Image: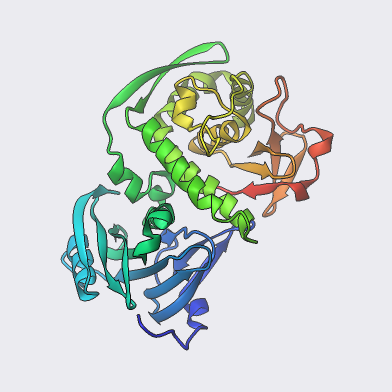
Length: 383
């Protein structure tokens, strides 16, 4: 890890990307396409000794990273893998283990001399359920930059996906920091129906932490030509974190409303009308984004949080949904693939009817004529 690789072309051989309209997740050659890492934008390859070992450096923040995949049997488990790797680098660390994705996962805070500089950072090792390999990630910065780069490093560690279910559940670091506390009963009223459902007592605080952290990362891209990609990633991670938190709510809403609906679009319209009736209120936080659990608990919301709420619920109902955000219009709307007629934007060969969440009595497939130019909108595609 002390010399730059001369085999830059190994990047193309070792990584392959899933294009997602201005943004990418990175998968690993030879592994299931379910295994991926949604890195903050702007990392470059410094060294690659094989198709399972990579050293990276951010061009946005003073952060380095190592990604290593160990085949089954190399180590006794995640704790052994992480402790051994940290020790081999001559570092000191604190370690803890917990269950994530039904397997023992290990995390670490470490410090020491890396590449000739006193540094500190975060590490994690998680099991890939499909083949029992271990994915290990280290992220660090010089000691003088470590506090400011903390959100960026934590975001990187939290962006590991080890199976398809992890695309719809909180990342490992957020899961460790905010363990489940138990169910909290809530009441919703949609389309005249009283709906009882639940979220976890930890969901609101955990979601707000994730949003605030990712907003701190997003701010680093204000003057970067990667701002669109960073914006998309910001919303992708909010979607990921919110999906499992709202899973029960989505199930209960569907059970209450679906029997009276002819199809998914009619159900989606009930959700759209519901969000249009929310109290419009900008969040009094730096991110200005209301967490989805807080909306269910009665907090105010604005366009992007409402659009994300609809997208999360519809995805949970197996509907093909999306959100669109616009810097020019300072606005966000939802999108839905439907065979109903109406106005929509084409993304990756699919037509998504637009859903306006802030104007009452607007149906799917309608949009203000001043906002109908698709080039002014950035699609945030979801799993």
